[in-house]
Length: 310
Image (cartoon, rainbow, N blue to C red; front, side, top):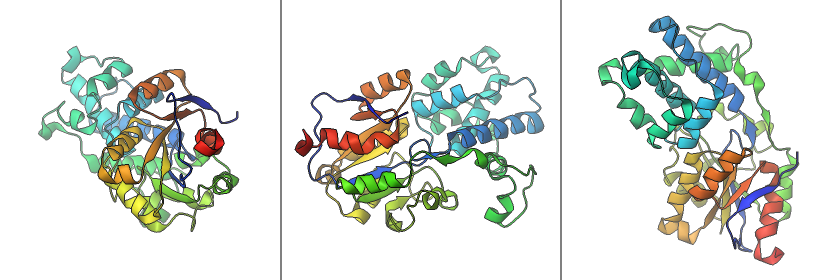
């Protein structure tokens, strides 16, 4: 499937000076969603069964994860795993009449407040331990690579193959060559991954191509804080660019950036990767500038809307 523009703001024009592309990682330039979703499902299920003995709790699904990521308010998959665990515990305590609402309704109830919303579902004394959810997620994710990454054996899950094996590039290395050919030669990364999870950059041939200061991971600053883009744009020193993401928090990051003084000096346009029709409708209303079905269509989209190419 080729990359193509599915929607764009009416009358959209990009300046000739556009020289920057900043990327989220998972779901944009790297297929990490399946691995992270499976790790979320397994870690939440483990805690509910083994710690709280809730054998009948509703399993987490890909559909529910997608609904909450579209709603926003979760910086990373650890936070989302924790929040999904809280919803099950709250239902077991009688909230929603003891039965969880359908995934889309539950995500809508969160109102984009994410982790803060989840904290209010139960008294703090009844919150599940976050370090346990994080540990389990990492053990399911890394599998037999866990000890190599963390310098110790896993505590709960010993498996030879982690969910990380599902990961793969979403763009070929020549994708970045193509961007440079059209004058977009400054690259940045804004991701919910943490520093020790950044191996995709090497796989994509971006090691040394992205200045270290232009890589902002979740252990530095979290999206949608515009400080993420402040750090990256300062490191790149460009003039104008696009930010390519695939979640509500990615879009919110750009919208907040546009309202800052720096955002007016170094303008960025929000490009959202959203192959499903319901996502396209949502992001077009929420403030996206361009919606693509695949990231690989970015160079041609930039050419299409640059003033010199019109």
